Image (cartoon, rainbow, N blue to C red):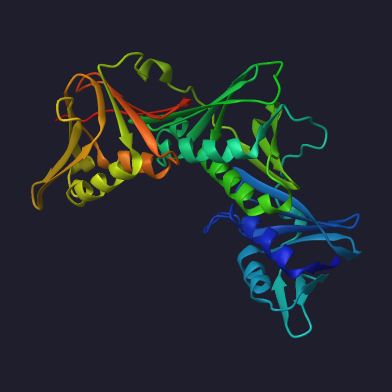
Length: 377
C-alpha cells in the first residue's frame, strides 16, 4: 500500500473517523483506523463495534493494499504537518508517513484483524432526509435522551416513518422531545426504528463538517439493513452505520397532554435571562428544582428556587397569559437544556395542573413539542 494525499483533506477525514473510537478498548485493533487503497481511492474506516464510519477520498494511489494504524497517533501527525501533501506507505509491519521535512513510522495491526463493517453496496436507500432537517431534528431531540445505559431504549432516538411523514422522538423518562418532518417522497412500508442518540449526534457533526462541499439543500440517504439490525446514513462519501437498539419503547403518546388550562407565550431571550438568575440557586437544589407561578392578572411568570444551605432567589418576566393562574415545580436544568437547543425567538408553554406534564412548543411551529414532567412543590 502506497499513496499520496492532500494533507488538509486527509486530516479532515481522519479526524472525522477517529471520533467514533473509544479511549479504552478491549481489542487493540479498535484503537486503530483501517486504511485501504483500491482503484485510485483511499478508504478510511473506524468502529467501536456499535458505531462505524467509513469514507472514501481521492488519492494518488501508487500501490493497492490495506492495514490498520493507531488512530490517535496518525491523526495527530497529519494534523501537525505544514506541507500540502503527505505520502504514506506500508513497509513490513509499519506504516511510513512522510513529507519533505518529516518522517514517522507507526506500528500496525494486520487488516484481517479489523472487525467487518456493514456494507450498503447491494442496497437501496429506504428514504432521503434533508440535511437541514437532520441538523434541526438532532438539536431539538437528541438532548432529551438518556446517557444511562441502565435503560437502553432511552439512549436512542425513535424514528417512525409513515407515508411522507417522519417523526423523531427522544426521551429519558422525565422529559420528551418530538420533531415531525415532511419527506420529499413517500415510502412504501412504515418504519419504526430505535437509533442510538450518539449516532444521530455524530451525523449532525458530519453534516456540519462537510456541508461546504456542495450547496445547501442536500439530502442524507438512509439505509435499513434489517438482517444485520443496522441503519446506515450516507452523506457525500461518508457512511455512518449504527447497530439499532433492541427493546420496546414506552407508549410515549399517552404522556403528551391533549388539552391545557394555561397557555403562556414567552420570549426566549427573556426566559433565559430570568432562568440564569434563578439557576444560581436552583443548580444547588435537589433535582435543580425551581417553582414557577403563572399570573394572568399581572401578565407575568415568577421563577424561584431555594437551596437549604445556600439561600433563595426570585426572578420575574412579562409574558402573555391565556387561561388560569397556576403554580408548579420543574427542573431548571431541564428547562435550560431545552432553551439551549431551541433557535426560535418565541416559545409557548402549556400546562394544566401542578402534577401534569408541562408542554413547550416553538411559536408558529406545530411540528415540534417538548414536555417536562413536574416535580413536587
